[in-house]
Amino acid sequence: MPVLAFLAIVLVSLCLPASTAAQTAAPGKITAAFASGLVAGHGDVGASLGATIAADLTSRVSLEGRGIYLGRGRGADALDLHASLLVDLTPPRRATPYLVAGAGLYRAHFDLDTQANLLLRDRGGMMAGPIPGGATFGGMFGTPGAGPGGMFGAGRMPAFYADRVSGIRMGQDGRWGMHGFTDPSVSLGGGLRFDLTDHLVVRPDVRALVIVGGGMTHTVTTATVGIGYRF
Image (cartoon, rainbow, N blue to C red; front, side):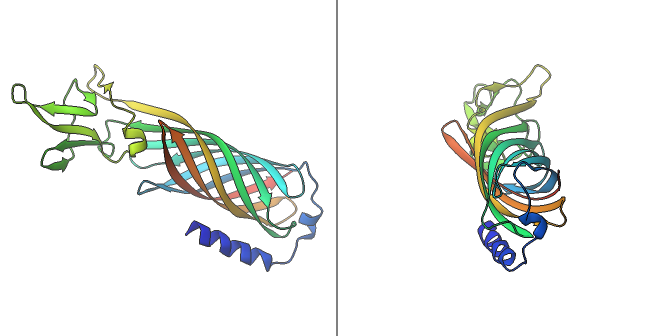
């Protein structure tokens, strides 16, 4: 669906008249914007909020820095910090489609005490419940003298992270606490830049973020609308 939506906005933009202000825009312009929207991945949809700043290197290529907070559901959130190149697909117009590719860091946080993240697994199936005190996160549990009764581990946490928390021990206060992961990431996507005036810009944007860590990858999709000012 993001690909189809992007193709649609490209076709629409090609039918719109060119903007005289955009055609005369010179390299060196700076655009600062606030962006908000949605993030989806691992079956969850959350809200996002952040900011971007982009410098025009040429009339069709810009260098962008982006920092965006991603709500990943109950007990989970993330911060995406990215540097990207934006390449216009057409000469400057009132509505100009572009492609974007970049790299950066993705910092994810999980509250391991939240039931959205913890799940008790017994031999008969799965059920939400507390984790036995003193055990490590991800392991066996059972009744003393009766042998192991099953396994416990992550509930809604993506396997990309759940497979990397084995061995975390419960604190002395009886809580697992908040744990974070920082991994490199790359992004690919596109959008449409609307030049409403010489200075006011609106930019819908869709990107796939591929996070790499522990020999695995995890992908989330962001869809944002940015409102910016060009200096």
